[in-house]
Image (cartoon, rainbow, N blue to C red; front, side):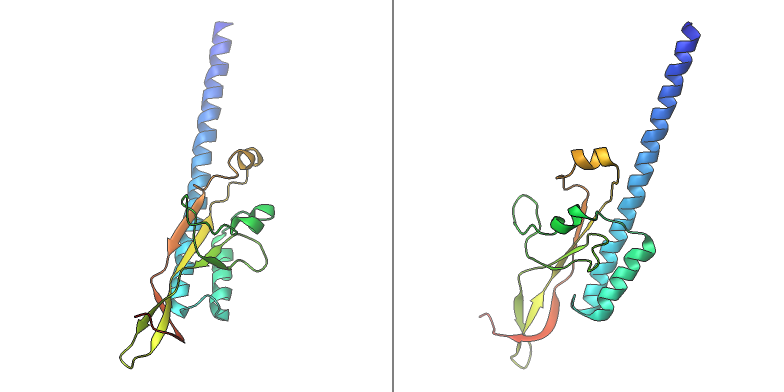
Length: 171
């Protein structure tokens, strides 16, 4: 009887080890996808110098589909981009874009605009964007326990982007 109980304990330990390693691998794959999507979106924002360009939005959505990015959807995605408080590590700025079909949560925030004077004396609006992507953990029990935690969020900022919009100069 002693050998039978020892065998069951060994099998349980092996199953727990397999579950932990599989969970770690799944998390790292989802983290990589979210990180790649964030970097790609920042590159497109800097390339097109805006978030409103049609090609940029289409290319961003197509790339997210291509790499298999699947951030939180449904009820989570509808309010995950709503926070605008600059405290407690949350993103400040206004939310300027989300996935139009609400397939996944990708948030883009436009930071406070500044201006810069060029050689002719014109002042152009300069903005930066903060992009937030999310790591999808689609396990119902874990989603309920960790719903409000922000460590499944990956944030990045673009460089300052000078737009073609002329504004009044700040002296």
